[in-house]
Length: 435
Ligand SMILES: NC(=O)c1ccc[n+]([C@@H]2O[C@H](COP(=O)([O-])OP(=O)(O)OC[C@H]3O[C@@H](n4cnc5c(N)ncnc54)[C@H](OP(=O)(O)O)[C@@H]3O)[C@@H](O)[C@H]2O)c1
Image (cartoon, rainbow, N blue to C red):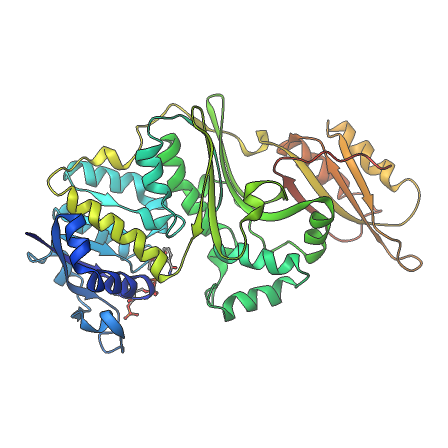
């Protein structure tokens, strides 16, 4: 039987699970891959670190060239993370004719185009199922199963940490407590910025956009808002109105434009994405012939992510010698990224206002003059004398540009106390105006 020798860049959470699965299931993996696969060595930061289980059996090195330049390595698995040196190592491996399997969304999102060029020039191959939504097989689905169809829209919950935090906030926890709980459970990093700010979901969306729509988008071009400014009051309002708040990554074809954004959004209870709870990830794909399909499952964690890495490894083994760079990316398209202000949504807005006559009229006048019409108004119970009161409005669909113009004017009204919360509504339920 053919032998394939693997070099690993990284032997952390994902790396050690890859080793575990490969070593424990050697014979059936060999059967499926058509080759026996052996991990030769792994690059780590500290060779002296105590490693358990299968990882303890793998020789380690701190010199990347022991893997990238090694003649006894055919395939490189990059599971070290970060931009550099990972990006440099990936391109070096490809240039030396080694197939690369990576879980690194940050590198792929920022340098996908350059990597594709290297892949093409060197007749190499790169596989990245684990880079988006961990164990959920969305990359292969877009590359193979949906290749026959024209994709119209993708909506994803691509970050389990924020989904977990939003779940706790929906139960009344404050943002800080919910974040601490996520860290305690091991779902959030000590520095959770990439998750909370939406940057992690944005990187994954950029990768999906290339595959689904053939558009090369740099992550910095995708308007991105995280969950940091959401309050338990907003989540309680959402619940009362029949919605859950989800951090959604959205890409949608509108004519010859592609709308793309990452933003918290109200999702109705009855919508399939609303049922995605805790750390799960989900991607809802609308395509012309097939209609809507949903892909849901564990978006992170050593074993789920390693399962995606191993599936790539088996594909890489099966495809040795059949190197076709373009199969890993979509053909380029004439689509252009839409201006963020042209996107259309209904909105939820929560104001803290003086409790006196004329306040609602002042707000609705500004909304109307910007072509924003009301779908519903909710006035929370009055507090003590002179205390501001929460006023909630739901609008009909309008452009993000019109909404932001109206809100900028409303913010100047003296009746407003403090900031306001504004969240787009993804698929509005029917609600009546109460005023
Ligand atoms: N964890 C998940 O659930 C998950 C899910 C999907 C995708 N991913 C992606 O998978 C990749 C790996 O994530 P992970 O959670 O496994 O990371 P991790 O636990 O931090 O492990 C990183 C590994 O890489 C090694 N390493 C890091 N920087 C290095 C450097 N400059 N030189 C040499 N070795 C270096 C570390 O060595 P030491 O062991 O010596 O420290 C460690 O073995 C990332 O791209 C991540 O985004 C992770």
